[in-house]
Each structure stands twice: as structure tokens, then as C-alpha cells.
Length: 192
Image 1 (cartoon, one colour):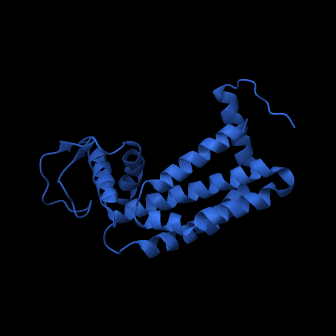
Image 2: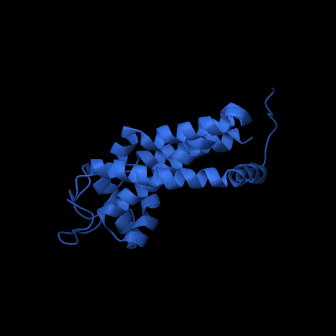
């Protein structure tokens, strides 16, 4: 089998990727139906009940909240306890040591669920599930038609049931988003 190494336009790449997704709708539904509760239960088992356990999550949460409120990529206080606490805010200070992608990805979740720590967990559950779906497509694409679906489902199951993924979801960390983005990047590259 030889690889097709000709240059591909973005439109063709997207069209081929969408065709692959359309053929797998039932399997994706199964992954979402089983994977979402699994990641939610696993992630929440690491969550400490009232606040994320890492300062990274708190920083990302407050940046996302400030972006949502139109105050830009800023920090309110030096060391907030929770993104939901409105008191104790100082003048917004530019925050230049946190990368912008994760707070930007959190904004829709905070808009839908409110500026609460649970919105960070919900976002990470969605990102981890997207990573599981990407793992399915990678397994399916790499192993071909015969074994591809079984290998893809196994890859998705390992991804959404992995304790490391649960830990990052429970800590409201940026890693589930990275898992999803890297997985989707590989899916797009292999769709050629």
C-alpha cells in the first residue's frame, strides 16, 4: 500500500474528514453515551467538592470569566480561592504567563453554566470525551476496515477510562483539551 502524498486543499481535507464522521455516527453516539458518564464519574471522583485543587485551574477559570465579562486576558487578584468569588477583586492586571487557548475554550462553558468551578469540570469532561472520539478514529484509520472499529472502540475506551484523564478532569486542567486537539490533528492528518 502506498501513501497518497499529493498536496491536498483544506476543503478536500475537511470533506474527507466529515465523510469519515458521517459513516461512524452510531459508533460516535455509543462512545458519547458510555464515555461521558464514565469520564464524569471518574473526573468527579478526583474533584475535591468545592474548588479545583490546582492553582492553574483557578487562574484559567478567572481568565475565562474575565474574558466572558469583557475585561480581557486579565487577573483580578493575586491568588483567588475560587473563580466564583466576586469579592476581593483588585484592578484587572494583564496576565501574560498563561497561554490563551484554554481560557478561550472555557468561555462558552462559563457562558452556558455560569462562572462556577463545575463549569470547568464540565468543559474538561467534554474535552476528554472528544479525545476519546479522536482515539476511536485513530484506531479505526490505522487498523483498516477489518479490525479498525474494534481497535478504535478499544482506544476510545482506554482513553476515557484512564485514571490520568480522570485526574486531569477532576483538577480542571488544560490537558484534556490538549488530548482532544492533538487527537483531532492526527485524525485530520490521517484522513488524507
